[in-house]
Amino acid sequence: MSAHSADARGPQPVEIALLASVFVVAACGLVYELTAAALSSYLLGDSVLQFSTIIGTYLFAMGVGSWLSRFFERQLPAHFLRIELLVALVGGALPAVLFLANAYVPGAFRLLLYGLVVVVGTLVGLEIPLVMRILKRNIQLKNLVSQVLTFDYLGALAVSVAFPLILVPQLGMIRTGLLFGIMNAAVAVWALWLFRHELRRIGAHALACLLALAALVGAFAGAGHITTLAEDKFYQDRIVFSATSPYQRIVVTRGQLGHRLFLNGNLQFAERDEYRYHEALVHPVMAAQGAPKKVAVLGGGDGMAVREILKYPSVESVTLVELDPNMTQLFTTHETLAALNGHSLSSPKVKIVNTDAFQWLQQPGDIFDVIVVDFPDPTNFAIGKLYTNSFYALLEKRLSASGYAVIQTTSPLVARKSYWTVAATIESVGLQATPYHAHVPSFGEWGYIIASRRPYRMPDALPSGLRFLSPSTLPLMFDFPLDMARVPAEVNRLSNQTLVTTYEQEWGKVITTH
Image (cartoon, rainbow, N blue to C red; front, side, top):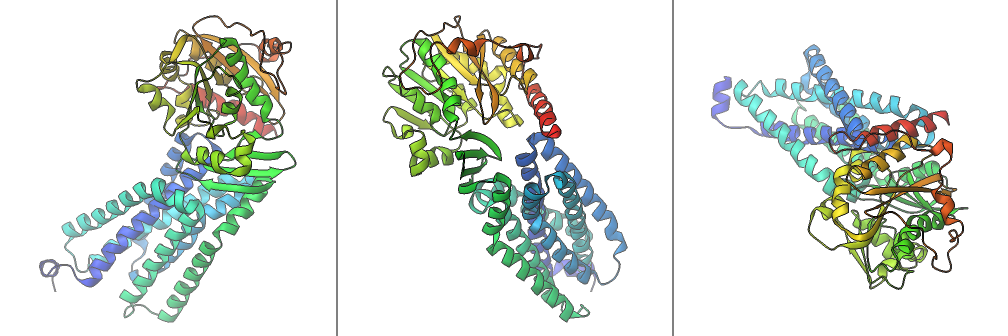
């Protein structure tokens, strides 16, 4: 039968099955690519760099795989089946292997990451050419290319939407990888059935499919144990809570230092000394303002800064703007964690807004006497935008004439240039920058910067019951020794985000030397 007559009679069951497999293959391939890129950005920082290098490496490997497909001449269905099983096992296990490697052999993480990306990319690059050559036997070339590419792109679209919105939040990285590994193995089983009359040693192929599926299903069932094994080793202390949201991996541990909160593996606070950090963040501006009534907190979803703000009787309202609803819900409802913030998020004075702070500032809204900016450090460009002159220009519009804003600003000792970059960026929008620092044992020497229209005035009194600050020691925080003194720095703009690169270089030196 000619290709033309085959096309005229419409698609046959084998063709439909293979085109459906193209959809699944494309979806699985993109999932492996996204999990590798997301994990590298979680664990290595700088999301733009990590996504760019992972995607570039993956696409190069797919090109290598496509080129290698020319050497597969006979028994194409058998080759396709074997490749599907290999992709299923290597791609499906990729997130679990990388999590374990980061915990047990962190020095080998990058090599293993790119090695697995190359292997999976090469195997995925082999799949589509083989499917096209199998289908070529019955479909006219012009229709073959259009149909295969249509299903390929549809599979990619489905996963690109589902990955951040459904898969990662509901299943986590490890289970997502294993689920799509199972789907790849299911395609192999499908191929086994479709081509059962063409395959040699069908019993060996069936056994391989059975063993691969059993391994992947077993790993999926035990994914929770794999995650616990990796995170217990990485965090050292016992994990009491963990969750993956569309925005980050949230882990709370408990050990000799009490509870500790980690976001994407980065420490946010330790129960033993968080009072030092939060008292230093909040009280220098709250007490200096006089009698603040309306206060905003940007970030700080753990509620610790809100706890300190509520110590001022003049406060009438606190608006907490936190991107991740999982954070505010956790620190509102979890009995132990809510106790750490004094149940501040349940106060009738507190209004929680779960949205992006940059977008929130762009909308018309209230003017505040004090704004507390408590974002994570600028480890990637998504966070780095919250340290730009564009952001501070929006912040200035929401600040009352006599108001103060305070920004947590990394370590002026470890990341000296990064710290003074923030100061220069604040000054670039016409605000005065008043830098100060405090020693927080869990972090070391830590920095803050006050932004205001008027010169900062040191307060004469502080609320009673503080554990760290006092009126007599407060002025010492504004004195910078020579190794933390100001250095020239560029303004951090949305168009360049120089702060992210500087931050990575400075903190990278510390990690390397240790």
